Length: 260
Ligand code: DGL
Image (tube, rainbow, N blue to C red; front, side, top):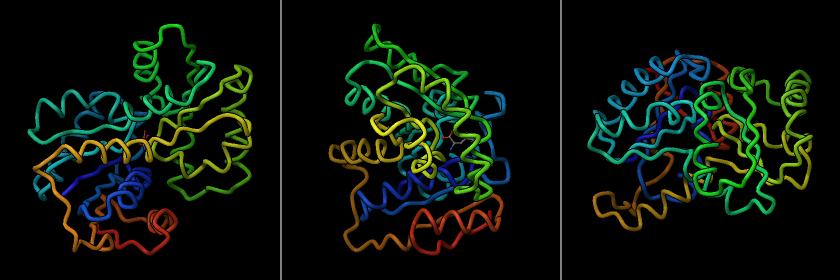
């Protein structure tokens, strides 16, 4: 079984992308809604939460973990790899690879939570491969709570997005990385505000494609052809109405969220 965790519902965009690409692999998801958002917390706290989430998934049978949260991936990946025997896959490297593949002008924008932007992880990874590229990063701390509240189409969300994207717009970026797994839910609002020509990199799709390649060379995790994705399990540390609404929106079907 593949274990996936995030600070809340955002990582379900990753679970959905994995389910669509690899429907025969059983998944278990953990959304730490009770402690969301992670992006405004210190690295130490995010690492502690990530250790607990991974322990929960491994104890429930996970043979591979996806950190479906950029904030957690940016500060906790090394620690999780040291503490656990199972492979730990994170969302950042696959998104960087896709951004490098698509960018023609070498002007790449990154949006993410404070923790992710503060870590400088995207910039470091991009410049390690292309020191001549220009990376422009903007923290968007209000977006995660807005998505968790289900304020996806609200006027206020559009106004806040316009404000966050304003400086990036002046930088003539050709590629924008959605460096938070909540942001694919705002893609339709981001695209017109950043400009039609800018390529959006959705880290949920990037990690699902990366996982597909990874599993092709793996023998410990094999697909179960009889597996039905509707049997995948979705745990949350707090059961809220908006979580149920967003889960159904992401999966286009009702999801039975189980509180733990
Ligand atoms: N989806 C998480 C991410 O990718 C949100 C983190 C948070 O809770 O702030 O960063």
